[in-house]
Amino acid sequence: MSRERSRHERSGSELFAAAAAAVARSDDLDDALAELLGLAGEHLGASIGVAYILDPDHDELELAVTFGIAKQVAADASSVKSATESDNPLAEVTRSRHTLEVDDASHLPVLRGATTALLLPLVVRRDGIEVSLGTIGLGFAGPLPSREMLESAEPLADLAAVAVERALALSLGSERAEWFDRLAHTDPLTGLANRRTLDRLLELEVARAGRQGVALSIALFEVDHFEEIQRAGGNAAGDEVLRHVAQVFAESVRLVDTVARYGGDQFMILAPGPDGLIVTERLVRGVAALPPVGNKSITVSAGIAGFPLDGRTPDELLEIVERAMQAASDAGGGRLVAPTPAKG
Image 1 (cartoon, rainbow, N blue to C red):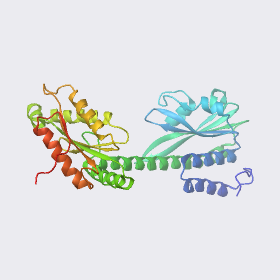
Image 2: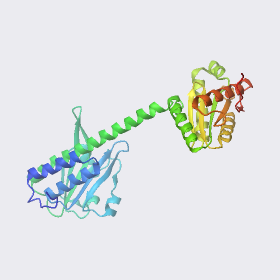
Image 3: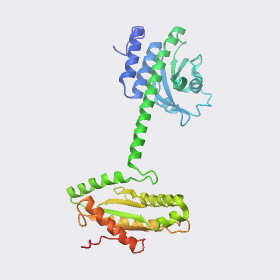
Image 4: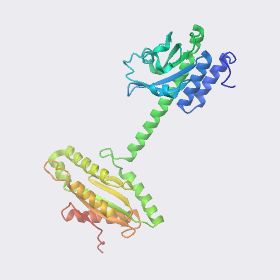
């Protein structure tokens, strides 16, 4: 049934069936709110309509959808700041959770041109407590509709509140899923990729380098004298060193590189292309420039291996790079060692 029909032509059951469908069938909050706001305006004969959603993190009401309002007016009234304290009627209705009938709409800039207005709170119950999610505003060119008509619009506001609540729940679920996914792939202490992620990416990068016939370097780093730092300053000092080293790595690698915590006091980078040696040398120098922790200088021993010269599989490359890193450590640390042939 066409949305363009007059409110006198659409029956109450048809109106609320359309409203329920708007909530149930739309996966976009703005679309659902626009449909509900339009239905409320059609039902009451409003010439102007707005829907604001409360952003509790920033204590603002944000304008979501409108009808009958010029773009500039909407831009000027895009938010209501300090919603918990503002004397703006939209904020007052959000706080009070009570419908407000406005006989003089001139002091509501967003409803400019309306003579009267109806402000409806968007309210849901959570654990038995009423929670405000925003406000719908409808402006009228003449007097307010009858009390019976005004009260019949409240279920539309309730459906709008349900739509907002559902969107918030979906958003929270998405954020939680993203957080858990990030947690599964990052090291909690340093924020770098973890060993699990590194192993997967190493497989992918080696396969890609083989297909495309391009170079790939991997470099392994170990913090020198880490056990001494921990003995002197405790675990807190050790964690501080790891975070500092991780920050140098994160800020110094290229966008195409992957940097990860390999385990314990070891880090690794995957550096596609021919410049892996340059990147690795930069990281060694960057760590050496860090300020001492507990009067102990921070340095790393590093080894590097390249595909396909030093190995053609992840296991071969890891074996070579670990041997090179150990050689750097045995030589006193604070340096980079290229691969050495296996003794046989």
